Length: 432
Image (tube, rainbow, N blue to C red; front, side, top):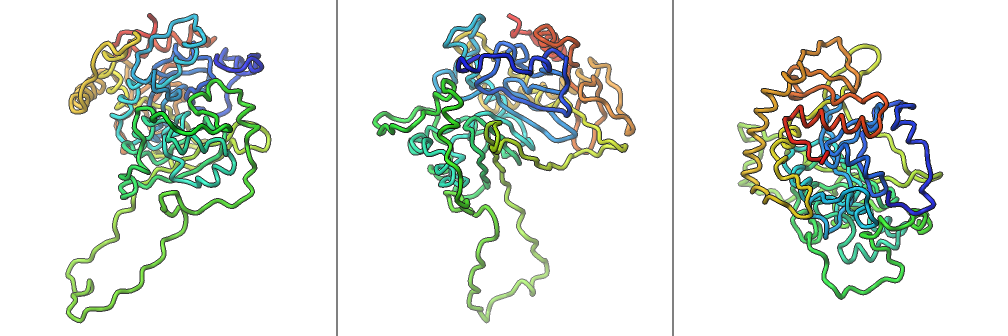
């Protein structure tokens, strides 16, 4: 685990991991840069870390009561981005960190998803600070200024995903600061170089060094207390606009009425009425602080379920997402466990054609392999149930993922990965 020495002590998560304790609510998690990566690797495709705690994997997408939740684990480092997963245990000081650096392989897979409702990441998408209260962020975290000015703050691949997938919500962490932003899609600002994602290549040399700067690329090597000590209390009200000038709240001022033309044909004279324009799509971004006293680390957000539940107690259905299963099968040949990418990736059209073929395979084979049964309206399967449902208005789905294996631990994780790869009839390269 890549953490300062003072954090290398036993906490209480081992009780959940071993099955001695159970989380009170269904919890969906991703990995960051201070995790026990050797254990997360065993659930590369996702699975139950503990009862009621589901890991999305290094990349993944599931459905919870019809809400599609996608996510990417790890943080961005350019020099590892195009590599394969070459790390082997026991890890040294280098591979202990490179194993959680996000790979192009997973970004390409996620880019093939249709728009999810929620996206989870540890890193911030690069440039997201320009869509929120940038001045307020710098007042609280002044040491971020250097990375913002040199376009080094955050992950370029994640910003590309945000602009392409257009999720309704995007939740992140990593920088130990509460920050919210709104990215309104299909606006001219999003096409400008100042607001769009920065290129994947590193910024050129010659930028002036800031003695107070903490390089974000090295945050995985930094004592978390150093981030906390540099926190500046936010005593000022936040701005109501983004750096690009897009209002966050309220309405834009009404334009002055134009002079009337006597020859003009008014809308009242038209036979057909014109309805209001469709609302602009936007992604609401929220990052939260570290879990410490008097810090903003917890927030409750209501996201309407796409599926109705029955009975007095609302049931929670955690389901496989069939589109993600198809993507997983289509990209399995490109999962490299060597230092380099062994096989060239397909072009976008070829990738989509492969996913379409695997979509048909998933629908034809997965329900039969799970001994599918139709879930009646009165049933309330547990989050770890192993059943399937019939098509619904929210789309075809598979209710449940692998069961949490009693006793948990590495044996349980390996069994889940073996079951998942067998379900999709893929080679289990994670076990190699």
